[in-house]
Image (cartoon, rainbow, N blue to C red; front, side):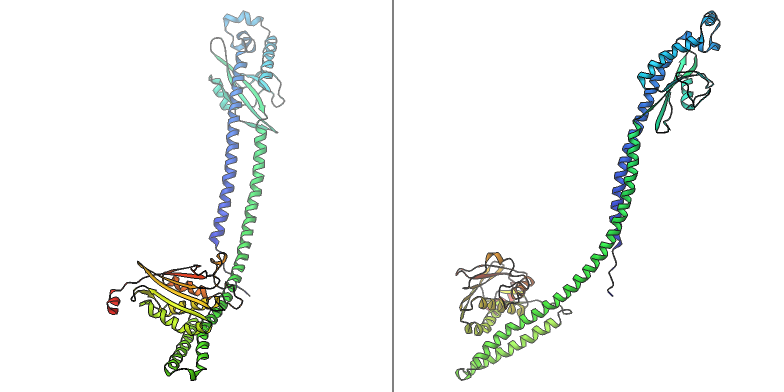
Length: 462
């Protein structure tokens, strides 16, 4: 059974926190807007009913107050109060209030005495007998001469409000308070929106939970996929290493095959030529052993320590070895060294040897019917430029950006690793490599390497 790697809790936590914060922000903004609108409507309704109550208080004449509040009349008006019919006064005030209520949208107008008793009402309320439902704070302010309004209260599906205004006698005495009651349907949409918001918040919370659960399952699935990809990468690496070993061994085998073919004509060789060929065989066998050992130690070895070495001897030795194979295939080669003999680079001579062999073999494969391979070396300031130019068909522009990719090849028998190894070696030596067209129309590989200038080496060569 495969053990899944643990899911990172921080990523899940931050994701859920972000969704939760977004949910709180959106809902909080909408709730704040609803509360602000609710408060604004509350204040506007209260101010409107305050003004209506003040107008209703002004509509009561002094003589009507004397009739409605007989105990408040003084001796100078006793004869007048005796002739005033309280009923006629009440009817007259109600008529004035009725027109006012119709225009202001009030449901009822009340006149209260200081003891909260209802002296006069526009419409008889079924919820009270001799007292109105009062807001004590607003009533108290009205009795000291200030207009006020009650808190917003709800009755069924209607929001109700009351405005209070003092009722003053002609001598400035406050004898009671007018209360204007009314409701407003403007609050209904806010209530509906708030209910919808709470439902949306509940659904969003459920969505966040579902997203969290989906995230956990997705992470577990991704963990399994990642583990399978790691396993596939491991297999691909094993295959790449095997292909690399095969490719690196194939190059020395080509040299060995060329030397062997010449040794078969031993009667045509001089002693010096035989010794040279046998030495070449020994050298290439040794190099094959080094390649195998390198790949065996790939997982634990460290890169060989870089040294400063002159490049010309390495190049000439590599081409000396390759000339046997190139001659067998009808490829003529030439080295044009247009730089100082002492020009050196920092790196590994064996790696550069592999690089030159790979480029020479690549040129050979590009010219199966024979051709010419020219190697040009130039020094430009602090840079060494190496050109491998062949007379083959060249590299099409459409694939020039891909030929250095591992396993990319246009030949049926190719592994697609040769030029990948070449690029890797060039990069390890701090250089760059590119491909273009040679003057003869074939392929041209251009390598730029930094020059390591050592005065002691130059003086030694001189």
